[in-house]
Length: 371
Image (cartoon, rainbow, N blue to C red; front, side, top):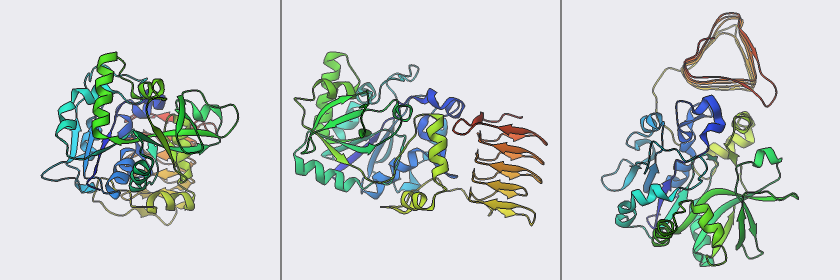
């Protein structure tokens, strides 16, 4: 789809993920045994034919740059366009409250000016789904919209909806209001923070932001909703909104449902990620693994139930792991019990340790800690 370019923004409420985002930005958060959150939106763009993709950075982006590399895994290592990294306007100032910070795009305005595509797909980095953006662009053209936002109808508790943007939508699909307060009566139309518009229109919005001093695109749209033709495109597939530790844990555990994992990883198109060569996982004759997702390069000698085990994890003899997420290269020694626990990368759990979190409130052990 040469008519559309993609921009993935990096400003998110990363403090909500606590220790998980202490050493990395939201886009680089590990998910599903071998992926990072950015893999989903980036793969969706590439599968939809987008070949010019920019990623804005804010802070703690070293892991993200290491993961993306030249963009080879996504077919974006190209002589022209391909994957482009855009530096933040103020990398030392992390603006946690802005969903789309136009100041970062203003700082890279020449990139927009020089791009050849007529349309822009602007997206956040924390929505896990498998989506065809070709259909979104077709919908946008059909409606003659200034801006099209992808949304999903959800019936969740208020806690799960915190931090979301809510849309009121007319029968013809036009958005009549944008706000941060959910309806008390279900359903709620949740913005997926994926916007399609013409490139020149985005540039005009940046000029409006410059003149007004308000750099939050969501607020600009909300304040001018009667003047801007904003339409909403419905998405009916699986959506994981990663906005807190609780829903990061819940959406991770949902991957153990075969229907969800099949839709997410084998839906409209495959989800690509950084390739890492390594041996297959070794399962001892004494181990017991049930309803779990285990990546390559692991060594399993204990029991693993209902858990997600990332690459290179070692599980000792007599160890029992249940309903937990164990990230890359962590070592769990013998006779350990882990229940409702999230271990970040390269954590060591010493022999005989017992860690039990509550349902929906897992214990989190930060990167490289020894317990």
